[in-house]
Figure 1: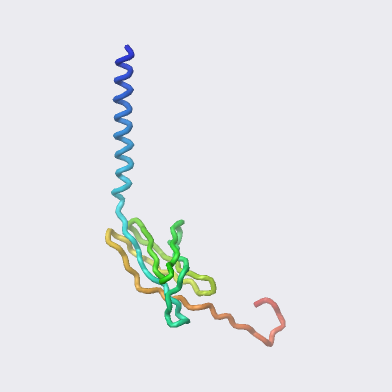
Figure 2 (figure 1 turned 90 degrees about the vertical axis):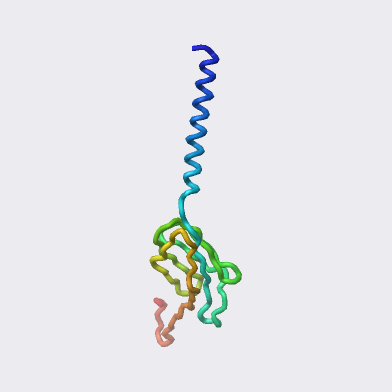
Length: 128
């Protein structure tokens, strides 16, 4: 094998490798999904937008935080998801079976309410 033949084989193999790599990268772009949009409101204060609330996809490491106007957006692939919406001092809410297809999903506003703790003032125990 001469140097020219070796060089031609090397160039052809690099072109094939580049083609295969390009096809793999472009196939990721064809994965269908959409955005899930919604807002979080404060149920105890005139349904004002609740900024910085956490919106998580249950079972996955995907989350978002609400903006100053209480809005959030998650980009998800097609499928069914459960969203968990929580904020410190508020009771968390789970929204089950959010179906994501090729079109965007717009959820109804989610209203969080504060946790209500009850105290027994007649009791001496600290196990509350």
